[in-house]
Image (cartoon, rainbow, N blue to C red; front, top):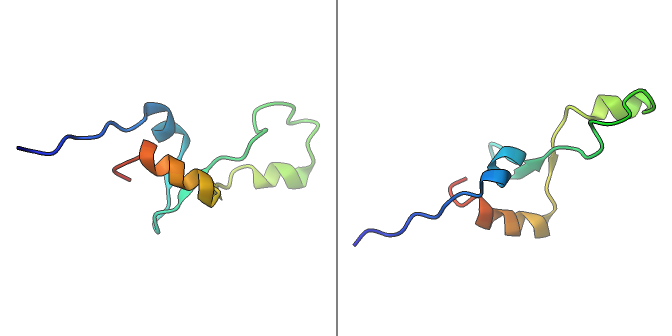
Length: 67
């Protein structure tokens, strides 16, 4: 009999990306509110994505099984 397929967590697939080397990437926090008050340096950092910490990456692998 065939193996069962695991469902991907729909919230996680929208919030996280996978890099070419397989790392899970996240968006920076605090992006949407109060942009006028933020420093230019902070605003320039926003478009980039950051890798997730190793402990969180382990949990996210369960939510994103086919990534």
